Image 1 (cartoon, helix red, strand yellow):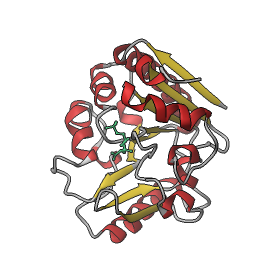
Image 2 (cartoon, helix red, strand yellow):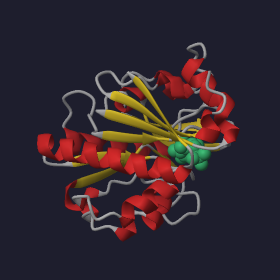
Image 3 (cartoon, helix red, strand yellow):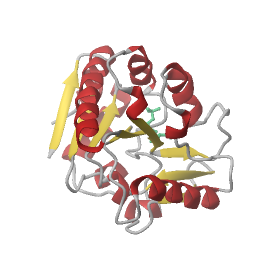
Length: 239
Ligand code: 6PG
């Protein structure tokens, strides 16, 4: 079930998404005694992370932090998704450090991907794909999400939980959760803002199904809910 929520601006979007996260957190803690969330990288989520950090409504000690993808750089690198999340959010809230699981971008990529899969097995068990409570995703203006870039193999991965792959377009390696894990979450929430993404967003949501070209289309939670949090600018071309 796809649920598109459109807001006049990013501020209202962030406030509403924060309330949604509080609802999911409460449900998760009631059912599982914890709240597992995968953070997305890039720039869009910064405002959300800053807003979360200012809230005193959350049960931070029950949060388990994962990442949807990571660049192959050290954790203190400008490009690191972990660094961005730490600076805007994790350094400001009392989530136990041993409940923050970063993808180690400083390691050899395939070693790092295998290590992260073991981390997920340790936390979620290895009886089927891990089921996170919430996965936050962004969408690039080429339609990619996490590090599933157009015309790359991880879009069609059906076995592995985490993959490292060379992204020709960026001339770099990336580490990413795979569609089976992303689609196994209770909730998946995309956050998309800005008019530069308007055309692509319409293609992804209303266009023909072509995940090789529009990898965000591969995100269709098996049992969970897919939520789109979009500002008016990004929604301006939705048919
Ligand atoms: C990353 C992200 C990526 C991001 C999109 C959108 O590592 O870059 O995980 O998937 O969500 O590229 O990025 P912006 O929010 O910066 O537009």
